[in-house]
Image 1 (cartoon, helix red, strand yellow):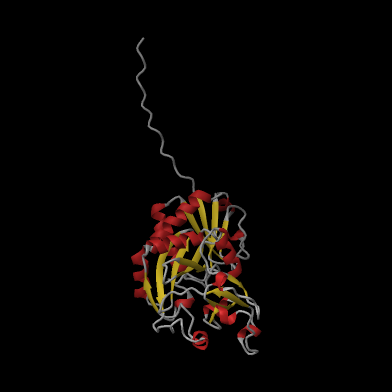
Image 2: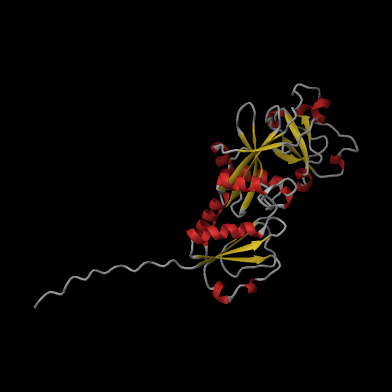
Length: 323
Protein backbone atom coordinates (compact mmCIF):
# COMPACT_ATOMS: atom_id res chain seq x y z
CA UNK A 1 0.00 0.00 0.00
CA UNK A 2 1.50 3.26 -1.04
CA UNK A 3 1.48 6.22 1.27
CA UNK A 4 -0.70 9.13 0.38
CA UNK A 5 1.24 12.08 -0.96
CA UNK A 6 1.94 14.87 1.49
CA UNK A 7 -0.59 17.66 1.12
CA UNK A 8 0.71 21.19 1.33
CA UNK A 9 -2.11 23.39 2.52
CA UNK A 10 -1.80 27.09 1.83
CA UNK A 11 -3.57 29.02 4.59
CA UNK A 12 -6.30 31.29 3.39
CA UNK A 13 -5.61 34.96 3.64
CA UNK A 14 -7.43 36.49 6.58
CA UNK A 15 -9.81 39.13 5.30
CA UNK A 16 -10.10 41.98 7.80
CA UNK A 17 -13.57 42.55 9.18
CA UNK A 18 -15.21 45.69 7.87
CA UNK A 19 -15.35 48.44 10.49
CA UNK A 20 -17.25 51.72 10.59
CA UNK A 21 -15.74 55.12 11.39
CA UNK A 22 -18.61 57.57 11.76
CA UNK A 23 -17.77 61.27 11.59
CA UNK A 24 -20.34 63.82 12.83
CA UNK A 25 -19.55 67.02 10.95
CA UNK A 26 -19.38 70.44 12.62
CA UNK A 27 -19.82 72.89 9.71
CA UNK A 28 -19.03 75.94 11.86
CA UNK A 29 -15.65 74.53 12.86
CA UNK A 30 -14.07 73.12 9.70
CA UNK A 31 -14.58 72.28 6.04
CA UNK A 32 -15.99 68.85 5.27
CA UNK A 33 -13.48 68.63 2.40
CA UNK A 34 -10.66 68.30 4.94
CA UNK A 35 -12.25 65.15 6.37
CA UNK A 36 -12.85 63.87 2.85
CA UNK A 37 -9.16 64.37 2.04
CA UNK A 38 -8.16 62.42 5.15
CA UNK A 39 -10.69 59.71 4.27
CA UNK A 40 -9.10 59.32 0.84
CA UNK A 41 -5.73 58.68 2.48
CA UNK A 42 -7.33 56.14 4.80
CA UNK A 43 -8.64 54.12 1.86
CA UNK A 44 -5.06 53.15 1.01
CA UNK A 45 -3.83 52.26 4.49
CA UNK A 46 -7.12 50.91 5.93
CA UNK A 47 -9.41 49.68 3.15
CA UNK A 48 -11.43 47.66 5.66
CA UNK A 49 -12.71 50.84 7.34
CA UNK A 50 -15.89 52.37 5.96
CA UNK A 51 -16.07 56.10 6.71
CA UNK A 52 -19.58 57.47 7.11
CA UNK A 53 -20.25 61.19 7.43
CA UNK A 54 -23.38 62.59 9.08
CA UNK A 55 -24.57 65.96 10.37
CA UNK A 56 -25.35 66.99 13.94
CA UNK A 57 -29.04 67.50 13.14
CA UNK A 58 -29.43 63.96 11.81
CA UNK A 59 -30.39 60.91 13.85
CA UNK A 60 -28.76 57.48 13.81
CA UNK A 61 -31.52 56.28 11.46
CA UNK A 62 -29.71 57.98 8.58
CA UNK A 63 -27.31 54.99 8.64
CA UNK A 64 -28.72 51.67 7.48
CA UNK A 65 -29.25 48.69 9.83
CA UNK A 66 -26.76 46.74 7.69
CA UNK A 67 -24.07 49.33 8.42
CA UNK A 68 -24.97 49.39 12.12
CA UNK A 69 -24.41 45.62 12.24
CA UNK A 70 -20.67 46.26 12.00
CA UNK A 71 -18.28 47.37 14.77
CA UNK A 72 -18.31 51.17 14.92
CA UNK A 73 -16.43 54.13 16.36
CA UNK A 74 -17.95 57.64 16.27
CA UNK A 75 -16.12 60.95 16.63
CA UNK A 76 -16.84 64.64 16.27
CA UNK A 77 -15.03 67.94 16.86
CA UNK A 78 -18.01 69.13 18.93
CA UNK A 79 -21.20 67.87 20.59
CA UNK A 80 -22.96 65.20 18.51
CA UNK A 81 -26.36 66.38 19.76
CA UNK A 82 -29.18 64.44 18.00
CA UNK A 83 -26.93 61.76 16.57
CA UNK A 84 -26.87 58.96 19.16
CA UNK A 85 -25.05 55.84 17.89
CA UNK A 86 -26.63 52.52 18.93
CA UNK A 87 -23.22 50.91 19.31
CA UNK A 88 -19.51 51.59 19.72
CA UNK A 89 -17.51 54.24 21.61
CA UNK A 90 -18.21 57.92 21.04
CA UNK A 91 -15.58 60.67 21.18
CA UNK A 92 -16.76 64.27 21.05
CA UNK A 93 -15.32 67.64 21.95
CA UNK A 94 -16.98 69.42 24.85
CA UNK A 95 -16.20 72.60 26.75
CA UNK A 96 -14.03 72.14 29.85
CA UNK A 97 -13.67 75.09 32.22
CA UNK A 98 -10.22 76.47 32.97
CA UNK A 99 -10.52 75.40 36.59
CA UNK A 100 -11.41 71.85 35.61
CA UNK A 101 -8.48 71.83 33.21
CA UNK A 102 -6.19 73.07 35.99
CA UNK A 103 -7.35 70.24 38.24
CA UNK A 104 -6.96 67.64 35.47
CA UNK A 105 -3.39 68.73 34.77
CA UNK A 106 -2.52 68.70 38.46
CA UNK A 107 -3.90 65.17 38.86
CA UNK A 108 -1.46 63.94 36.20
CA UNK A 109 1.44 65.97 37.55
CA UNK A 110 1.57 68.19 34.45
CA UNK A 111 3.09 71.60 35.26
CA UNK A 112 0.41 74.28 34.94
CA UNK A 113 0.07 77.82 36.33
CA UNK A 114 -1.62 77.96 39.73
CA UNK A 115 -5.25 79.09 39.18
CA UNK A 116 -8.23 80.02 41.36
CA UNK A 117 -11.46 82.04 41.21
CA UNK A 118 -10.67 85.67 41.91
CA UNK A 119 -12.18 87.46 44.90
CA UNK A 120 -11.48 91.05 45.80
CA UNK A 121 -9.18 91.34 48.77
CA UNK A 122 -8.05 87.71 48.60
CA UNK A 123 -4.64 86.87 50.03
CA UNK A 124 -2.03 85.94 47.42
CA UNK A 125 1.15 84.52 48.86
CA UNK A 126 4.06 84.94 46.39
CA UNK A 127 5.41 81.63 47.68
CA UNK A 128 2.35 79.96 46.10
CA UNK A 129 1.68 82.27 43.19
CA UNK A 130 5.11 83.49 42.15
CA UNK A 131 6.04 87.18 41.77
CA UNK A 132 3.32 88.00 39.20
CA UNK A 133 -0.28 86.96 38.51
CA UNK A 134 -2.73 87.61 35.70
CA UNK A 135 -6.45 88.27 35.95
CA UNK A 136 -8.59 86.83 33.16
CA UNK A 137 -12.32 86.28 32.59
CA UNK A 138 -13.76 82.84 33.30
CA UNK A 139 -15.64 83.10 30.00
CA UNK A 140 -13.31 81.58 27.35
CA UNK A 141 -14.85 83.70 24.57
CA UNK A 142 -13.60 86.88 26.24
CA UNK A 143 -10.20 85.38 26.98
CA UNK A 144 -9.70 84.19 23.40
CA UNK A 145 -10.57 87.67 22.13
CA UNK A 146 -7.95 89.18 24.44
CA UNK A 147 -10.44 91.12 26.55
CA UNK A 148 -9.83 92.07 30.19
CA UNK A 149 -6.46 90.37 30.67
CA UNK A 150 -4.28 92.20 33.18
CA UNK A 151 -0.97 91.40 34.87
CA UNK A 152 -0.26 92.42 38.46
CA UNK A 153 2.65 92.11 40.80
CA UNK A 154 1.42 89.48 43.25
CA UNK A 155 2.19 91.54 46.33
CA UNK A 156 0.38 94.54 44.81
CA UNK A 157 -2.87 92.61 44.18
CA UNK A 158 -2.90 90.67 47.46
CA UNK A 159 -5.55 92.07 49.81
CA UNK A 160 -6.46 94.78 47.31
CA UNK A 161 -9.90 96.10 46.39
CA UNK A 162 -9.93 96.99 42.68
CA UNK A 163 -11.89 100.06 41.47
CA UNK A 164 -15.66 99.84 41.07
CA UNK A 165 -15.36 100.18 37.28
CA UNK A 166 -12.85 97.32 36.97
CA UNK A 167 -14.12 94.38 34.81
CA UNK A 168 -13.80 92.06 37.80
CA UNK A 169 -16.70 93.91 39.41
CA UNK A 170 -19.14 92.68 36.75
CA UNK A 171 -17.52 89.54 35.34
CA UNK A 172 -16.42 86.29 36.98
CA UNK A 173 -12.63 86.30 36.87
CA UNK A 174 -9.78 83.90 37.50
CA UNK A 175 -6.44 84.74 39.03
CA UNK A 176 -3.55 82.76 37.59
CA UNK A 177 0.17 82.53 38.14
CA UNK A 178 1.84 84.57 35.40
CA UNK A 179 4.67 82.78 33.58
CA UNK A 180 7.42 85.03 32.24
CA UNK A 181 8.05 83.86 28.65
CA UNK A 182 10.67 86.52 27.92
CA UNK A 183 10.92 90.11 26.72
CA UNK A 184 8.44 89.33 23.93
CA UNK A 185 5.42 87.43 25.23
CA UNK A 186 5.27 84.00 23.59
CA UNK A 187 2.82 81.10 23.48
CA UNK A 188 3.05 77.74 21.70
CA UNK A 189 0.16 75.84 20.12
CA UNK A 190 0.18 72.13 19.29
CA UNK A 191 -2.81 70.57 17.55
CA UNK A 192 -3.40 66.99 18.68
CA UNK A 193 -5.76 64.35 17.29
CA UNK A 194 -6.31 61.29 19.47
CA UNK A 195 -2.91 61.78 21.05
CA UNK A 196 -0.88 62.54 17.92
CA UNK A 197 0.51 65.98 17.12
CA UNK A 198 -0.57 67.35 13.72
CA UNK A 199 1.52 70.55 13.94
CA UNK A 200 3.31 72.87 16.31
CA UNK A 201 3.51 76.66 16.17
CA UNK A 202 4.86 79.62 18.12
CA UNK A 203 3.24 83.06 18.41
CA UNK A 204 5.39 85.91 19.69
CA UNK A 205 4.44 89.54 20.23
CA UNK A 206 6.40 92.06 18.18
CA UNK A 207 6.76 94.68 20.91
CA UNK A 208 8.95 94.22 23.98
CA UNK A 209 7.19 94.10 27.34
CA UNK A 210 8.21 96.55 30.10
CA UNK A 211 11.05 95.49 32.42
CA UNK A 212 9.71 93.46 35.32
CA UNK A 213 11.20 95.90 37.82
CA UNK A 214 8.94 98.65 36.44
CA UNK A 215 6.50 100.43 38.79
CA UNK A 216 3.19 98.67 39.45
CA UNK A 217 1.19 101.02 37.23
CA UNK A 218 3.42 100.18 34.26
CA UNK A 219 3.13 96.43 34.90
CA UNK A 220 -0.65 96.67 35.19
CA UNK A 221 -0.96 98.61 31.93
CA UNK A 222 1.18 96.36 29.74
CA UNK A 223 -0.41 94.30 26.92
CA UNK A 224 -0.75 90.74 28.18
CA UNK A 225 -2.22 88.75 25.26
CA UNK A 226 0.57 86.34 24.37
CA UNK A 227 -1.24 84.98 21.28
CA UNK A 228 -1.07 88.25 19.34
CA UNK A 229 1.97 88.57 17.10
CA UNK A 230 4.16 86.76 14.60
CA UNK A 231 3.40 83.09 14.06
CA UNK A 232 6.06 80.56 13.12
CA UNK A 233 6.20 76.77 13.04
CA UNK A 234 8.14 74.63 15.45
CA UNK A 235 9.29 71.01 15.45
CA UNK A 236 10.75 71.18 18.99
CA UNK A 237 10.53 67.54 20.07
CA UNK A 238 10.32 68.35 23.79
CA UNK A 239 7.43 70.73 23.10
CA UNK A 240 5.54 68.17 21.03
CA UNK A 241 6.03 65.52 23.69
CA UNK A 242 4.70 67.89 26.33
CA UNK A 243 1.59 68.47 24.22
CA UNK A 244 1.01 64.70 24.05
CA UNK A 245 1.18 64.57 27.83
CA UNK A 246 -1.42 67.37 28.01
CA UNK A 247 -3.74 65.45 25.69
CA UNK A 248 -3.61 62.46 28.07
CA UNK A 249 -5.60 64.54 30.56
CA UNK A 250 -8.60 64.61 28.18
CA UNK A 251 -8.73 61.20 26.46
CA UNK A 252 -12.41 61.54 25.42
CA UNK A 253 -11.75 64.69 23.35
CA UNK A 254 -10.67 63.88 19.76
CA UNK A 255 -9.07 67.22 18.85
CA UNK A 256 -7.24 69.60 21.18
CA UNK A 257 -5.49 72.91 20.67
CA UNK A 258 -2.83 72.66 23.38
CA UNK A 259 -1.52 76.09 24.45
CA UNK A 260 1.85 75.94 26.18
CA UNK A 261 4.08 78.49 27.90
CA UNK A 262 7.84 78.15 28.22
CA UNK A 263 9.35 79.94 31.21
CA UNK A 264 12.16 82.18 30.06
CA UNK A 265 14.72 81.66 32.81
CA UNK A 266 14.21 77.89 33.29
CA UNK A 267 12.98 76.60 29.92
CA UNK A 268 10.23 74.74 31.79
CA UNK A 269 6.95 74.11 29.97
CA UNK A 270 3.56 74.93 31.51
CA UNK A 271 0.18 73.71 30.26
CA UNK A 272 -1.96 76.81 29.80
CA UNK A 273 -5.12 75.22 28.30
CA UNK A 274 -6.34 72.69 25.72
CA UNK A 275 -9.24 74.57 24.00
CA UNK A 276 -11.44 71.53 24.46
CA UNK A 277 -14.52 72.81 22.60
CA UNK A 278 -13.15 71.70 19.23
CA UNK A 279 -12.87 75.04 17.42
CA UNK A 280 -9.17 74.54 16.74
CA UNK A 281 -8.95 72.95 13.26
CA UNK A 282 -7.21 76.01 11.84
CA UNK A 283 -6.56 74.38 8.46
CA UNK A 284 -10.09 75.57 7.66
CA UNK A 285 -11.71 77.04 10.80
CA UNK A 286 -13.65 80.32 10.60
CA UNK A 287 -11.35 81.73 13.30
CA UNK A 288 -8.38 81.86 10.91
CA UNK A 289 -10.29 82.65 7.72
CA UNK A 290 -9.32 86.34 7.69
CA UNK A 291 -5.58 85.75 7.31
CA UNK A 292 -5.41 82.16 6.08
CA UNK A 293 -4.23 81.53 2.50
CA UNK A 294 -4.26 78.35 0.45
CA UNK A 295 -0.48 78.47 0.09
CA UNK A 296 0.09 78.82 3.84
CA UNK A 297 -2.33 76.04 4.71
CA UNK A 298 -0.94 73.69 2.07
CA UNK A 299 2.59 74.39 3.26
CA UNK A 300 1.62 73.71 6.89
CA UNK A 301 -0.06 70.39 6.06
CA UNK A 302 2.88 69.34 3.88
CA UNK A 303 5.60 70.31 6.36
CA UNK A 304 4.06 68.27 9.19
CA UNK A 305 2.35 65.58 7.01
CA UNK A 306 -0.71 66.52 9.07
CA UNK A 307 -3.39 64.76 7.04
CA UNK A 308 -1.27 61.63 6.61
CA UNK A 309 -0.80 61.48 10.38
CA UNK A 310 -4.52 62.06 10.89
CA UNK A 311 -5.37 59.16 8.56
CA UNK A 312 -3.00 56.82 10.38
CA UNK A 313 -4.29 57.85 13.80
CA UNK A 314 -7.95 57.43 12.85
CA UNK A 315 -7.26 54.03 11.30
CA UNK A 316 -5.41 52.86 14.41
CA UNK A 317 -8.10 54.17 16.76
CA UNK A 318 -10.87 52.49 14.75
CA UNK A 319 -9.07 49.14 14.60
CA UNK A 320 -8.43 49.18 18.34
CA UNK A 321 -11.78 50.39 19.63
CA UNK A 322 -14.60 49.86 17.12
CA UNK A 323 -17.30 47.76 18.83
